Image 1 (cartoon, one colour):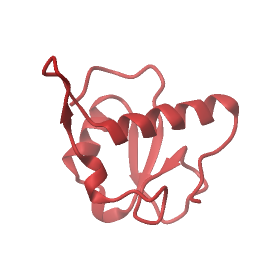
Image 2 (cartoon, one colour):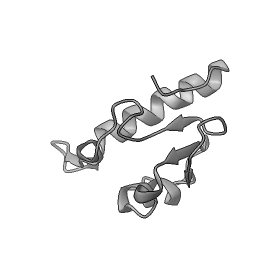
Image 3 (cartoon, one colour):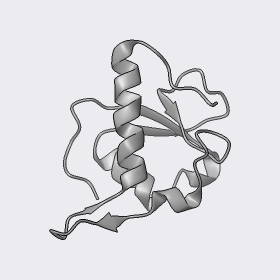
Length: 94
């Protein structure tokens, strides 16, 4: 669920079949660019079953004790991608 607009938008590449996922549209609403990819060289982070071991289950939404909903795996991915972007390194499929 979007918290607002990001001041550090990322270009996030995903497999074409994921392009309409509501979880990814939340990232777009926050200001990130989500694009379907077949080449990894122009994105800050790539998501997919063969990239960072990302699976459908990792889009899970959880709830904190105060009732706030969040996506732990997506949040961790965004934090790591921003850190790599700031350091000048690129996230890559490993």
